Length: 467
Image (cartoon, rainbow, N blue to C red; front, side):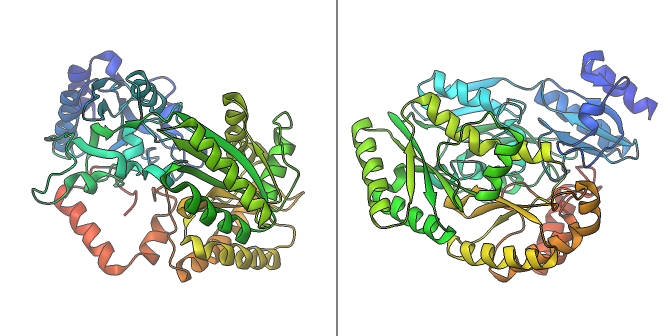
């Protein structure tokens, strides 16, 4: 491999190729489940350098693992332990190339941190609505490669719906210039959608043109206490009826998830009493702050009158609104502090969610008494993070080693029976590769493999992930 490394160094310079020292940050995934060993870490600073790296790796038949902020949760962006895979980190490619205010679009490189993309849009008086807990470290390229969702999918859609065009480097080092701010372009197959959500297995996204929106004049946030998940679904229906497109966020948190936050992060304020389900909802209005507040207060009053909501707290200022969201976003941190847990990023028709949760909670309680279900997520778009923790006093690592396969089977069987998906927004990576092979429609898998073979016949791009 020395010839390849010498050639890469000639292209990237010493700062652009890491071959020694501590590479653990690139070789270990976010959850510390996968630890690999990289041949080296390439850090290109331009699309031309990415293309040169891919041409050299194609020539030398060396596999490449694209990596953004390395915040993924399914082991999709870390190398295996062979020491023969090159990690290609895009974090040096972080320029915002253009903001077109009249076209309401922004073009940025793949290594741009999501929070920086949001800030650039805000600086131009516009909104980039993709928002998730890791936005301070995840990157735009990774968001697109996994079709990230986040907290505002209900109003603005996933990363796919926010993307207008892409720039992509292929497995052979060619560059597809598909950057475009067009809303309409019917000139053949939609290659953009092919690469979004492909987890780096078909090409390397190096830049993207994204949709922007008007900044809301007012953003209103509230917590609402519900006695059941059926009540939370009824509140969602009422919110859609009253607020329409102004409803931008609708999150649910079960009692166990907020109790876990109280145990692990006791300094975080919880303004409502403990109830079976707490809803975090947000409305935003681009036209009138007064109108938005009137709709919001009327919605909650109607929900309380109808018995859908037991109690509610409306944020009185921006700081309080942020504290409400911080409470929701702290659940994964509390879980990490509590120890390893079995994560499920699932999606279901909203109408099927109460039945799924009630049935699965009962199944797991019967399977292992004392088991704890930390259930939270984006009810507005049907996405739950249905996570399972060990009973009190049981070692989390031992619990996972013994029970993960059986619990996964129970959860995924129930999801599939109700027409749901085993991956809503986290992707497949290595973690769910076998599940996908066993559960995905055979015709769909065949088409996916044919596309992979056509675009990457040597299997050099992120091998062993997704397929």
